[in-house]
Image 1 (cartoon, one colour):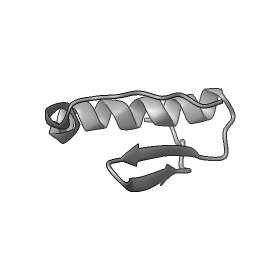
Image 2 (image 1 turned 90 degrees about the horizontal axis):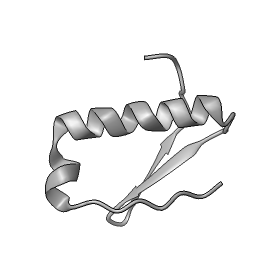
Image 3 (image 1 turned 30 degrees about the horizontal axis):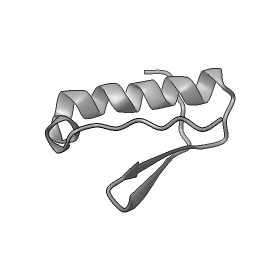
Image 4 (image 1 turned 120 degrees about the vertical axis):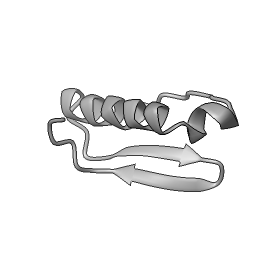
Length: 54
């Protein structure tokens, strides 16, 4: 599964928004039984592999 999402620089700099994004990615990883959820911010790739409960 591939999901593309776009945001503004201001939104991605908000700590509260980043926390919500991280929570969403962990939930998606658990529920979709993924091995990894990847985020690309600018030119940097972030791998999320720990989908532990919040």
